[in-house]
Image 1 (cartoon, rainbow, N blue to C red):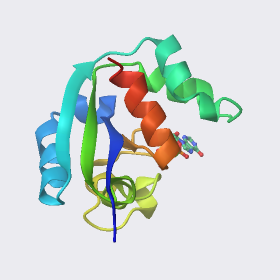
Image 2 (cartoon, protein in one colour):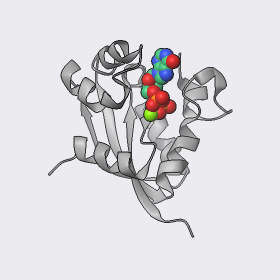
Image 3 (tube, rainbow, N blue to C red):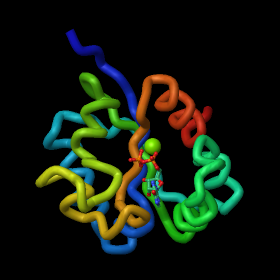
Image 4 (cartoon, rainbow, N blue to C red):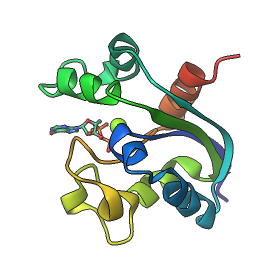
Length: 136
Ligand code: IDP
Ligand code: MG
């Protein structure tokens, strides 16, 4: 039995800039993920660095943080059965070149940096990431 979960999704600057927000939301909805909460924001570079701190030792960390804070993003809480894994499946592989057909990254991703979406990768990280953006 798969459990109902919540996960955090981000539509990254490259996709917001190309007006792909509604198309991407449609894909989530079509795949039985409910959009529980959504907001459009711009992160400072410090906030992006905090969000991505699990990657702080990676060579691409600075570029990643600059990129995520380079323009408006749309953050969402997605809810559904096995939402964390389902969202990862719908997103496709990190590098759009390796993503399965009809995944968001295959359809819209431009490169490994500009890969259009973020999705939490575990129950723990989903909780942390939801709390990061939707603390109340
Ligand atoms: P994910 O977004 O598929 O979970 P992660 O490994 O968590 O992938 O990496 C976070 C983000 O960092 C990726 O979405 C991608 O934009 C970027 N990234 C990951 N690996 C590389 C790399 O080898 N070179 C450049 N950017 C990378
Ligand atoms: Mg990740």
